[in-house]
Structure formats: structure tokens, C-alpha cells
Amino acid sequence: MSPEPGAAQGALAGLAQALAGVRARVKEPRPLGPAAMDVAVEAPDAAAVRDAAQGVLAGDPIDVCVQPWNGRRKRLLVADMDSTIINVECLDELADFAGLKLQVAAITERAMRGELVFETALRERVALLRGLPATALQRTFEERVRLNPGARALVRTMAAGGGRCVLVSGGFSFFTGRVAQAAGFHAERANVLIERDGMLAGVVAEPILGREAKLQTLLQEAQALGLPLSETLAVGDGANDLAMIEAAGLGVAYRAKPIVAARAAARVDHSDLTALLYFQGYRETEFVTD
Image 1 (tube, one colour):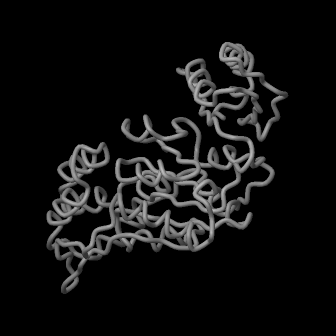
Image 2 (tube, one colour):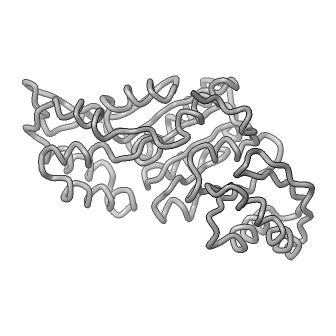
Image 3 (cartoon, one colour):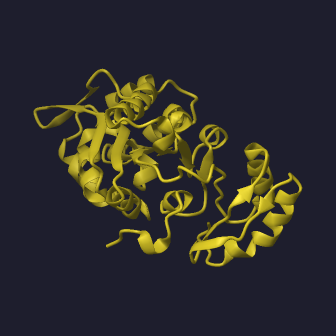
């Protein structure tokens, strides 16, 4: 799929030729929407198909997902919040009200790239906010936080199809509760900022929800539903999302850091979050929108 109507369909001839080189036979494609095509392929080696498809489409504004045809529609979605479901890193925006955005954002970037231990980096950033009025939380939400394009359609469509949708974040419950309600998630999990006398205390409640806790959320939610991991979908952008992305039946890197994009089964670099619905074989006419 592509944010440019017609781009996906226009790439079909070159894709078919590339796939023929890895002994893959392309069946009749079907349009899922004006910007998405569903292409059934018979091939002995899925990895070779993925490499060939990604190679021939490199440089084009097209996102591609290679996966088994059966079992594509997932029954559990576990999604990261910051820079995935929403447009910003909430902690960076919160720090802006303390005049510390550049300093905090630099630490965030390194943590999301996997260069720093997430829990240590979170404690360091939160400590810098000590004494910031707690009212800055609401200002951050109202003035800075927006759902990313396609987020609400993704969640509401999967929920309408009987799926469970869970928002999980290494950020803060103040934001996840509000974002989960806005997007339509069934549940949310996040860290808790400590407040004292109307001010941020500069500490976060322990234990910190990080990479391992996100993975455990996926595993526990799947177990509670009686689902094999093959029926789960996880999406995120940072290093602390990687464990759940690799464990899920379909793990998607959304506008992700290089370490995540390189290891995820699928990646979305160009399209909006409805790409995750197209990956599951949903037609645009099936999307729940408002």
C-alpha cells in the first residue's frame, strides 16, 4: 500500500518480475482500496519473496507485508503509544513546559534507538521534571497530543471484528487513559508519575513498565483470551517495543528506529496506521470510521 493512490497498482508489473526470479507465482491481485493491493503468491520460500519484494520496491513510497495468506486477521492488538498511536513523545513535550525539551528529547532518542537502558533513561528524564506544576500534564495533552492518522480506524475496526485492543506504553498513565478512550482501546497499561502538592515529584512509580513488561502484556493478554501468538499483532517504533514485536504473530515497525525496522516482520514507513488493516486483508469498505 501507499499514501499515493495508484502507486501500489503501478508497481505490480515490476513486483511480478522480481518474484518470478525467486520461483514465486503471482496470482490475480485484488484491490483493497484506492491505495492498497492484496497479492496472493505461491512460493517455496517466504523469506526470499520478502527480500525480492522489498528490493524491487526500495525507493518507492510503498509499504509491503509478506505473510501466510491464512490467519491474517488477528484477534489481539497490542500497540505502543508515543510516536505510534499518537504524534509525539509525551515526556519530551512535557519537558518543554520546563524549558528542557532539547535535553530530554536527546535522551529519549538514544533510549528509543536502544543505546541506553530504558528504565535508567526514564528515571533520568523524569528527575529533570521535579517541581513542574502537575497542570502541565493536561496542557501537554490538550495542546500537543493528537492521534496519528488511521489510529482510531485501526482500533475501532479490529474491535468491531471481535478483536481486543490494548495500549501499552513506557510513558505515563495520565496520557494512556485519555488516548485509549479517544482511540477506542479496551485497556491500557503505562507508568505512573508521582505528584506531591500539585507538583511533579521527579520520580516514577516502580516497577517501571519497559521492554519486558510490554512483552508480558502481549503474552498475558493472549493467554487470557486463549489465543496462540500467531493470532496477535504488535506495533511500535522504539527499542523497548522490539520484544513484543518479535513475539507477535505479526510484528510491525511503524516509522521506527533502525534497530526495530531491521528486525520486524513488517514495517510501515509511508502509509498511515490503516496499513495494519490492509495487512490483515481488510477492504477499505470494512473500515469503521467517524
